[in-house]
Image (cartoon, rainbow, N blue to C red; front, side):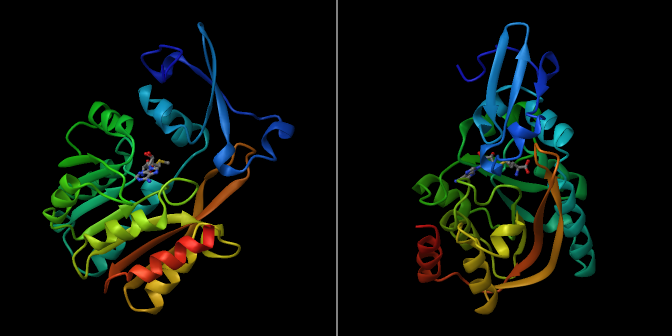
Length: 270
Ligand SMILES: C[S@@+](CC[C@H](N)C(=O)[O-])C[C@H]1O[C@@H](n2cnc3c(N)ncnc32)[C@H](O)[C@@H]1O
């Protein structure tokens, strides 16, 4: 069972981060873990074990928002608010594809901003279940899908979505969303559509192994993506207590991604 502690809410758990420096310092971001302690026992999970995280109500928020102070959903909402205002765009006119939607924290921010139509996309069925459980009604539709190769049902639904905005927050790279899934989702956007995304600082500066740096530079250079705002910020704390920096971009789609750009991006990580 995913939730081997059988608790019904994260409030019933103690969450222990590996605070001892010797335990925390050497951990890469995708290796970070914590312990969940209940009267029944102890379960160790990785921060990227989203299936477990989403199976316990309140646990994702407890770990990401409270323990390691993740700011990304709010940062993206604030930047998008400013840029939409500057462009005189009513948030209610947006039709958003939220890629790597998780349990709906980004959608909740967007709804507060005035967005009315949001399509959730995530590879995990547990994410959809958690979004419907924790934030019912924030999504118009929620598709469990692998966007590297969307099945015909999802493809048809996304083509019919008439999307003019793509959000992807704290979900690119790290064995999560690969460049091809991002590119395929971008393809569903109307020309002129908005893109609001976050990506780890290292992936856009130096030594990028994810392929995203190359793909984004190519999109920008070839005129497929016009970057409106590039904002470097503290995404969250690492378990060691060190800050982790990301970039948040607000951009506009100005053209299509060519197939060769995706192939080239994939070669970077191969
Ligand atoms: C850190 S969570 C972020 C969730 C949400 N965007 C937020 O900011 O709260 C990353 C999400 O990306 C999803 N994900 C990972 N790989 C994916 C893929 N290949 N396609 C779609 N979603 C993916 C995970 O299941 C998880 O829900």
